[in-house]
Image 1 (cartoon, rainbow, N blue to C red):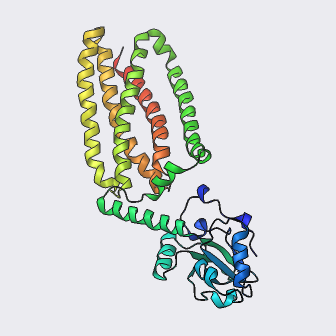
Image 2 (cartoon, rainbow, N blue to C red; image 1 turned 180 degrees about the vertical axis):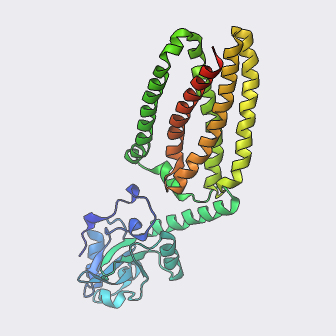
Image 3 (cartoon, rainbow, N blue to C red; image 1 turned 90 degrees about the vertical axis):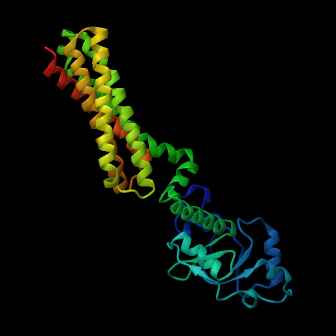
Amino acid sequence: MPSADTCVPLERVDFETAAEHATLDVPVVEGDTTAAAIRRLLGARRYRCASHVVVVRSRQFAGIVRVEEALAAPDHETAAQLMDAQAPVVAPGIDQEVAAWQAVRRGESALAVVDARGDFAGLIPPDRLLAVLLAEHEEDLSRLGGFMSSTASVRRSTVEPVRRRFRHRLPWLLVGLAGALASADLVGAWQARLEGMVMIAFFIPAIVYLADAVGTQTETVVVRGLSIGVRLRQMLARETLTGLAIGVALACVAGPLLLWRWGNPQLALAVALALFAACSTATVVAMFLPWGLDRAGIDPAFGSGPLATVIQDLLSILIYFVIVDAVVT
């Protein structure tokens, strides 16, 4: 007979299948157990779910007895006489929505999970069935309303424990740390250029920041679009043109301001061109990176931000120094 202490920790799993909702911490009896013995069993301790009594033959599932029937039955009646031998069952790997609706169609408030050998693998309690139905209802409404194509992953990411949050986010930030070190190496490669004209270094933070800001805006739009089922090709042209327009606008504003403030036309031109190129590149990176992560089955909400920042920072610095080498004498 399954042990009660092997129940699935409901608060610590990503709910998708029937088995992940099931618990073994329920009253389990053999078919010859009397109603009086069942009542004593129910009063002996607290169960995770006591709405139904599971009846087994050895380890194999035989049926379930509703607790109200067990409480009202004569002392001598057995579990085999009281049980519903045709109670609905589901396999451990069946989708949670299918399992919940099967219980609803059969008029049961709990659902037994049975493995391929017929062994009892757990009971899905009424509160879990209700939670599944509510979640699936919300998801259907969200799809109809165009809010997002799947609310399940969003819901999991907001309620998942600290350990999982840490595990999901830290690897991407370590990638960011590696990118920061690479950026330092990249700047160091132009050390001689910087020593010859220190003013060149003044504008690196501005170019990197503005490119990141443009990329973040595009990335937010793309991630939102992907979440509601919008394909990248539907956003590609407009976002690309928007990125180009923003790059032109920033370059047109920055060039005259730099010329007025520092009086160096070559450097002003180099910064303006770098802003245009970096912001345009940021738009492309911010579009294709979330799309690639989504196609790979990775949540773009976790990875696209840090990874896009690393890539764009390196590209922005490289673009700036290449343009400076070409324009500033």
